[in-house]
Image 1 (tube, helix red, strand yellow):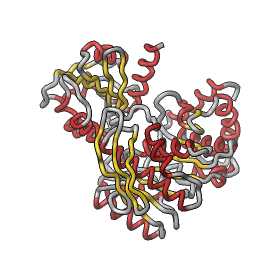
Image 2 (spheres, one colour):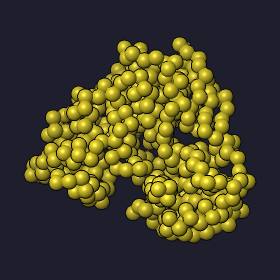
Image 3 (cartoon, rainbow, N blue to C red):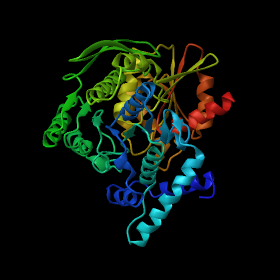
Image 4 (spheres, one colour):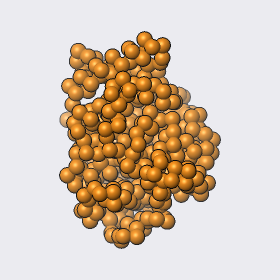
Length: 433
C-alpha cells in the first residue's frame, strides 16, 4: 500500500461485496499469514446484543490492571481504525497500511489457487490478529461479527467464551427462532473452555447448555452461577450487587440500563474465571474500575448547551426493548423527540411498538447504508401513536430539526442504525469544533 487512503479505499471496495458465511477463506488467509491467531490468548464474545459492551468492559478492566489488551470490535462509531485497538489506542494509520501488504499478497495467492478472495470483515479479522501478534499483547478480547459458528472470528480457541444473549436478528443467516439462532451462536463454545452467558430465553439456554455438555465446557449462567441484583439507576450510572460463590460486592457501572446490569455481571464473572486460571487480577479493583468504562452510542447522554441528547444504538428488537425500558424507568423529560433511522432488514414494526408510545414528536431519517431501503416506510408504524411524524431524509438536517424542536426540559433521543449514529456523532463533533 502506498498510503493510508489507498488502504481505506481497498477496505471500502471489499465491503461492497457484503458478508459471506463460512470459515474456508479466513482459514486459508490466516494460514498464508502464519496463523497469528494461534499465538494470542483470547476471550471470545458473541451474542445478539451487548457483545460490544462486554468486549469494551473486559478490555478496559484488564488494561487498568496492567495488561496489554487487544480489542477487536465492529462496526465502528468514530473511525474505521477504532475496530482494532490496544489499551484504548486505535491501530496507527501506518501500521494498518503496512499490514495490508501481506494480506493483499495472501489474497492474490488465494485467487491464483482458484479460490475466493477474503471479505472485508475477514481482512479486518486478519489485521487484528496480525497487529496483536506484532505488539505482543497479553490478551485479546475478540467480538464476534455475526452469529458464531460461521463467523470469521471463530478460528480461535479462547480462554473463555461469552454468549451475552440470544434474540431474533439476522434471520436470513441465523434462523427464525431463538433456538435456531442459539445453535449458531453456540459454535464459539470450545472443548473444555468455560462459557459465560446472560441468556434468559429458556429454549435458547437449553441449546447452549446442550452444546456445553457436548464440549465438556463448564457453563456459568446469569441468575444461577452468578447474579447481578439491581440497586438503582441514574442517567449516568447503573448500581447493582454482583454475586457469585466467592463474592458479593456493590458495583457502580458507567453503562446505563437494565440490560447493562447483566452485561456488567458477565464481564466480572469472566474476570473471576481468568483469576482462577492464574491471571493476576484484583477483583475489588476491577469493580472500582467499572465506573471508568466508556462505550459510545449506548444510552450515551450528551449535553449541548441547554439541550440533552441521548444516543442509543437500538438497532434491533431487543435493543428497542432495552431503550424503551430506559426511557420509562431512568430518564426524565417533559417531551421526548425521537430521531429514528432503521435499516429495512430489521423488524421495524415490532421495534416501533416499543418506541412509539414515548415519542411526542418523531423525525424519521435515512441511515447512510445500502440496507436502508425505503426510509419513509418507518412512518406507517408510528401512526397508532400520539407523536407528530416528520420525514427528513438527510441526517444532518434531521439533527438540526431535532435540536430546534427540543426545549431545555426535553430529551432528543437518536436511535436505530449504528451507521446513522456514526453520522450523527460526526456532525456533533464537527459542530463542536
